[in-house]
Image 1 (spheres, one colour):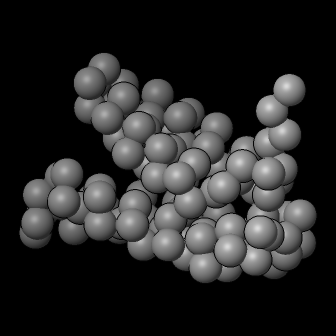
Image 2 (cartoon, rainbow, N blue to C red):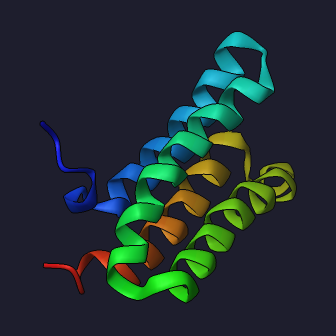
Length: 104
């Protein structure tokens, strides 16, 4: 059985943001993208809590959802995919620096 407390969260968040966006774009159902993002967040939160407790979990969760919010106005300036990829890199980078590299 897969131990979800040992899953690296940076690629998980990248999958949640990119996959959630692609799913919403492909189906035309934006809430479906949100469900994909939420699933990634729930799994990542377990790891973050194990590494840094509630403060780390709250901070990285806020960064993750803020990245999604920032991607919308940024997309008007640089395009949708560059925006999604840019905010994904920022959120995943934060997860790697603050959690993933500390848990190895």
